[in-house]
Amino acid sequence: MDYFVHDTAYVDHCNLMPGAKVYRDCDVRNSVLESGVSVGDFSRINDCKFAEGVLLQRNAMVYGTEIGKHSYTGKNFTAWHCKIGAFCSISWNVSLGGADHDYLRTTTHSFLYAPEFGFVSENPAYDRFQKPCIIGNNVWIAANVCICRGVKIGNGAVIGAGAVVTKDVEPYSIVGGVPAAPIKKRFDQNVIDLLQESRWWDFPDSVIKDNFELFDAKTDKAVASELVRIRRQFDEEMKKMTVSVAIPCYRSAKTIEQVVNDIRKAIMSRPGNDYQIILVNDYPADDTFSVIRSLCEKDSKIIGVNLTKNYGQTAAKMAAIPYLNGDVLVTMDDDGQHPAEDIYRLVDKVVEGYDIVYAHFKKKKHSFFKRITSKINSKILEINGSKPKGIYLSSYCAYSRTAAEALLKYKSPFPSIDGYLGQVADRVVNVEVEHRERLAGHSNYTLKRLLKLWLTGFTNFSVVPLRFAAFSGFFFALIGFLFGLFTVIRKLVTPTIAAGYTSIIALMLIIGGIIMMLLGLIGEYIGRIYMTVSNMAQYTVRETINAERRNGDDR
Image (cartoon, rainbow, N blue to C red; front, side):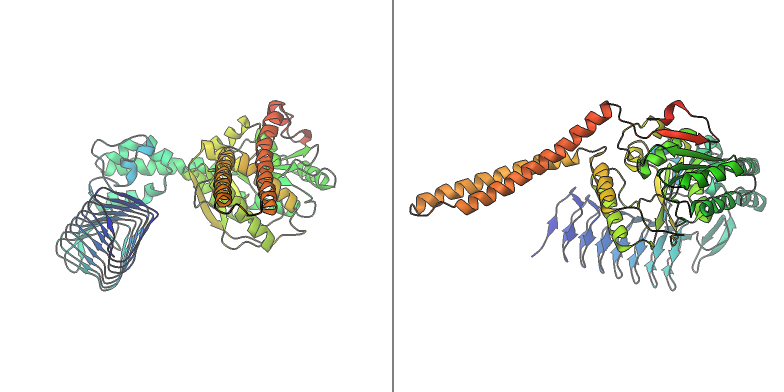
């Protein structure tokens, strides 16, 4: 049987069977295209996976897609951030990895036209290079192909005459011919040396935006020299950065001193930088605050905050916010499992322009129970829209000053930092970090605490549970109606049939239980609303060390 997708169709999250035909001007996203699928002219393919032997017709635009081997692409084909398999045939007038190089600009990066930067060049260069475009071995590429930077070409590839290749050559070179060879440099060597010294590609978005005219101008020695000056000024400012670290402390008398020493050593490894450490004691029933007091007496840059009772890890983090004076806020645990020497891996991403940077532990040293429950919590937040898809949440994370200060407005007695910031900041990224063994003790998260955490994450900043309740009510009402209709018809057809006492009681118990569950869910929302409008405290501070009590530290 043949499968057809008609002209101008929108296809999302589908599996197109072998031999299917996608007609022209279609938009295909997040889908799998099996062997022998044909995609029509002028179609757009985003984040898909192609099996072997797929046919892409002319003028197709492909982004973030893996193309299987032995596939064919028609002329005027454009591929960004793709992986093209071995033994593929790529037709002429093709652009791989980018397009429309303006050799007289310093760069043709997407910030010259991307709307999220708040400006667009009058004559924007169009190079959406962010990730590499990878081409497999023994691929045939026809004439007049533009292969821009970020492209990795496998061994034995054949590139036709007139192709431009700008990969694996000296900086700012133009390469052409068969085999490809350098033709000339885009700029004089002294200009290239200055551009290399400026390392403009490492500038945060804010620096690029403030100096946009330099990137949009024709590059000469004056422009390159100014970029070097900006680089030196930026590096000097980076040296003066203060990193604030907030640590919720719970029964950590045996570990917190070692954690603090590791943090100081890591932050001071960059000369000129300074630190602030805020230790919030969330369990005043042991001697943890005595250890915190001793650390504060030895170092005035350490602030001790003692809460009146156990409010939970999230509330303890919120209690640290009013005392923040650093340029970047880092939160981490008190048990030593978060490596302090990796702090700058998170901080540097914030400096690049991200609002939130989460550590991603490829292999966690938690118990099986903790790993499973963490995945459940992450999935709950993803379902109700509190976190972006594909982002791994972690208590080891860094926040920009803007994101951290936004938390000052957040006074809910049921705080969910990740959920709240998910509503006000969208520049979020993961950084891979090693997870360590605990210095001492064991995890303090019980099933009761985790259930409370899940409930907070599920009900905060989302009406998804209420919509689920409404859908469930409609669904079971429909089942009840159909079952009643079935019973009446059955009785009319067979008058002697006995009444179904057991089935009626079973249905009553099932539906009654569901009603009580949904009423409990609605009651949870109403209870939280009542406690919020009653100004129930998020936390209360008993005492502080090395910091004055502030108006916002009891809320």
